[in-house]
Length: 424
Image (tube, rainbow, N blue to C red; front, side, top):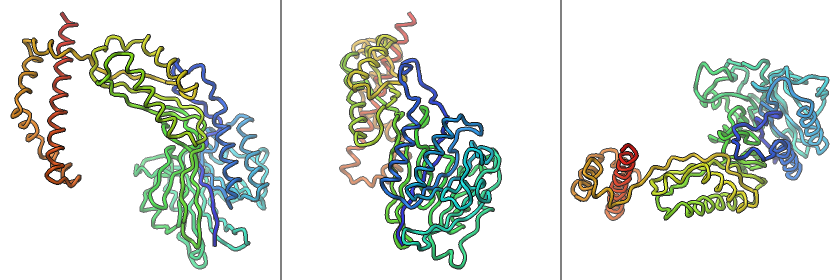
């Protein structure tokens, strides 16, 4: 018994991109989701998978535009033409009211199963492999209404009799957050594990994740700054009842990312542009063999810098244009978050007669820094035990902590001096 399948979820056809700033207003990302959906279809056909599991929220709402309906209908028919079975459940964004016979006229004998439309709202399906042998059983549940606050596991039963000989899959849209008052099919890992299935194809959470056989595919295409990182589908291959391949396949076209740049070591304001570009170049190069064509990056600036007052709108616009050109328009900075602090020079700190000067003079005493280190020993010892340091490693660690403490104090002194100067 050998077969493969794709687990895809939370496609949200019809949902626009959101959270784009004025910096990225000239980017046309309107067709990104449609292209990501086509990437999924192409991948399924290339792999010649036996079936596809779509675990809810295929549409973004109960009332879809015609284009969204057409994209899904044509996609499903394309898979059916290739002999690929599809099992689709309704989620909280696209409950069963989203699907009508007038738009999705697949009869009960079709290889396309919209659970609840051409089957019962909770049902199970026997799947045969390419040799015609029974290989898997899919236990599925669709949301009848947008709010489904029951524990979905009450609608599922552990495999019995001959079912135990097949590969059992649970297909559902649910919230495993442990919140009992969740309106979206709240349940727990232990609830699912008690069913004794071989794989759970879950929907609802937009970030791909897995805990053994319990897996969220995540959304196909990130649509805002909360949905960072790669998005795509899960590809699963089974042989003799065991999962032999379990891969996450990125298929997104546009990707949101956060990068963090410490400007503390930048010699001047222009040097910071190089640091930002290097970080973004690394990001693009790391993902060059994937389907992603455009990165929308939120840049977080940190550190204490002498050029604090020069990080302004002119700087932002200059960096945005510079990165656009350097990346050949493969990256746009969607936002710049400035968390830097002003740094006064050492001579100013040394000559300060107030708090800053007092702190600076105090940290020149090595014994004072060791006292600080020792005062934090309880929490540090937990880290040391976790890292299993030998004596040499421990001394290196201790030295690094003391140096970082000293550096942090100097940065604090610089901030105090700057604030005092601005207030005078």
